[in-house]
Image (cartoon, rainbow, N blue to C red; front, side, top):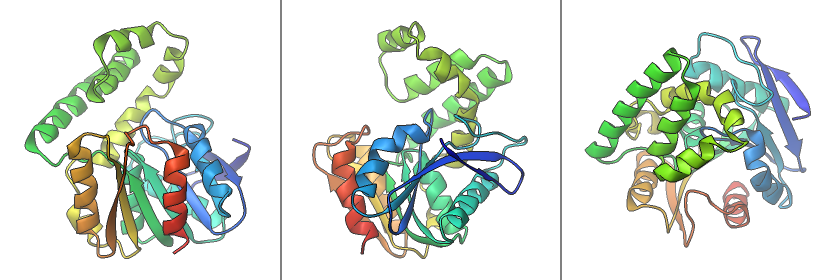
Length: 260
C-alpha cells in the first residue's frame, strides 16, 4: 500500500489507487487486506474507473485505535471518499459488504453500492450458529488465543478439519494470526447476522446485491433479501460462481452497474 490517509480518530489508513475515471472503493471481508481485492481492482481499472483498495483498520499496513466501533470504520470510508474527490461507489465483498451497506445507510456521499455475498443468516439455524461463533470468538481473543480464533472462523466457513490443521502448519498461519483480532471487527459489523432491513431501507443510492450460482442457496436468499429491503435494490446471480468469485467475472458486472 503506497498511499496513506489519516482517519478522524488519528488512525493511519494504507490504500492504493489505480485507474482513471469515476471513483470506486473496494471493501474487503474477514481475514483479508486490500491486496486481496487487487485483481478485482485491476479488472475495474481497465474499464475506466479509479479504484481504491485499502487495508481496513487492524490489518495490513493500516493502524488501529482502541476502542473499536463500527462508526470508526464508516469514518475511515468517509476519509477515503474525500481523498478521491468527495463521492464514490462502494463495493463490499463478503462481510465487507455489511460495512459498505452501513456506510451507505449512514449518509456518506455514495453514488452506488454493490455487495457480493454478504453472509447474512436468513434462517434461524444460521443465526444460532453465528451467536455461538461470536461468543467463542470473544473468549478466544480475550484470552489471547489467536490461533483458536482463526480456527473458529475457518470452521464457520465450512472448511474441512484436515484442511484447517494443514493451514495451521503452513507458512501463511502467522499472517492469519496477525489479523485475527480484526475478526471481532467483522463480527461487530455483521451484528446479529440478520438482514438489517431497517438500515437498508435508508439506503438511497442504487444497490446491487450479487451472489454466485454455485454458492449455497442461503447465500442467494440473503442477497435477494438485501436487494428487496433497499428502495433502489436489485439482485444479480452469477452462474457458476462461488464465494471465491472470479474477478474477471465480477468486474464487468460491477462496471456495468457503476457506469449506469
